Image (cartoon, rainbow over all chains, first blue to last red; front, side, top):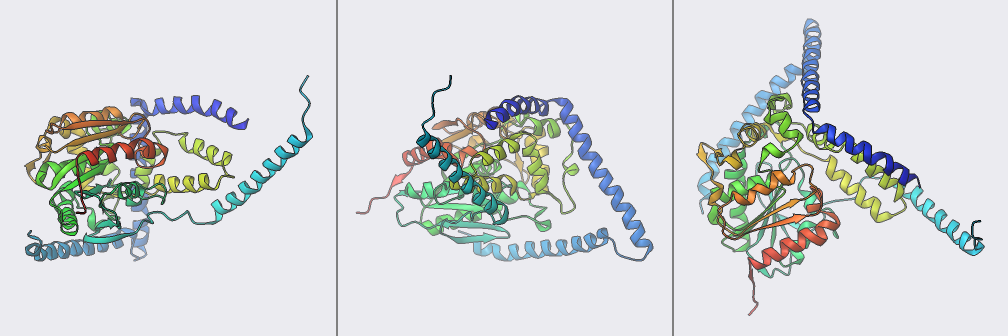
Length: 91
Length: 361
């Protein structure tokens, strides 16, 4: 019984929402929200970084910078090992 | 006036309902407290690896057809989707039909893989995996089955390295990006740039991918939970629900460089349809695919819509090309009743017609 009531409500609501999702207006709104989220995250990061740096403490961005360097080294290592492996891969 | 109720029948109905309620309570507690059931349990061996990519070979004592079958899955999902349960396993069904099955598993990309472009997969990982499959099976060619974005990679590979490929089956392939619904509206029309969704690791995070799928059917999850509540007494239903939920939620990061290429080339330039795909500075021409070709798509697929997948068959150069339309959605191609009744019989029949039976004498 409850399932029939649920389906009777869910299907028309669901179909309306699914149609709405495919409109340009929804795409505009979603794009705006995505950009605002990114901007606010960046803004928050900047504020917390400034505060931490004022106390002479490292911020997440500093850790990320070090991590990026390690990643760069690891990528270079991967490239070099591939170049060394290549002669073995010939059929 | 209502007909008189047989007391015996009434008691039986009450007993039945109480039994179901007890099972529902037990399954509900299990659902909340226990880990989801194991997936990807078929016996397999790793026969090749490069960076995070792996090639699995599924154990079989009864290979009756050659060439072997190589499955190429998407860049945003995990490889276990092809092996959800012992009774509902894409690879298991192919293996039981007599094929030697290999599966390329891309692994889970991290910062180090953010620079992986489409050519990393098409010109580096796939040739390496195929060479390993040929070496292991003693065959000279493979039949390739690609799924979703994996089918795009497989098609580009087949066009670039046609000598390796005996047969090519493409499932739910996003070929025409102008008909990809919300994705096209967001990226094709320039509302979003790739960097708007790429995070600090240089990849598109899995939650963005999950949300992109979720938003296409906003009440879908609610309806699924209503189904779970209704069938909570049914052990198999609950287990299947858990596995499907795991699949739907368990995405992996999309390597940033490959995502940028997907948006700039495949989406904005619609390069597969326009024939302008370039990888590593060289043009990739899908008409170079001349082997037997099977294009499979779901009539109700809201992720890779039929309009996005249908044109692929007209882009390849094969004389022998067929189409298989599944009366279901994106996942129904790989798992569930539709996969068992339509997709798998269709693929197995097509593969058998285009493969060689191995005779024992």
